Amino acid sequence: MGPRVSGPILVYKVEPSYTEDARKARVSGMVLVSLAVDASGKPLNVTLLKGLGHGLDEKAIEAVGQWRYRPGMKDGVAATVGISKAVVNFRLP
Image (cartoon, rainbow, N blue to C red; front, side, top):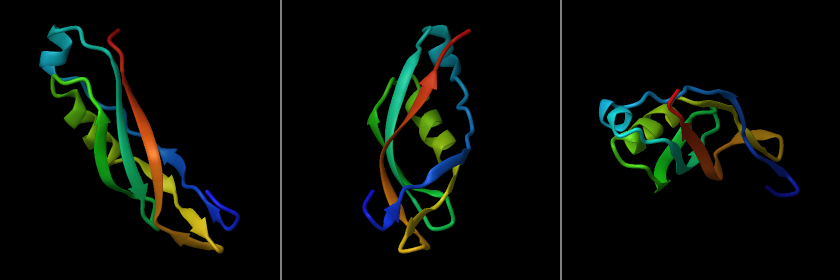
């Protein structure tokens, strides 16, 4: 991130649920989102970069919104830090 800035670290991850439409269509793959993490470790501005459709994009954004991070640090103080992307995988059994 930089000489005096450290990035956030994922500490809690919620797995997304499948939509009935995606299950019927047998859709699997990955959804790519961008986000920032605030000084308390909560995701901000979760935005879709690459989706799968069938309602899975919304489920991915919803799940990532519940993830928690150890916040990034700037000069030894917790700070809001942007992350370029996060991947949410959807796999049918």
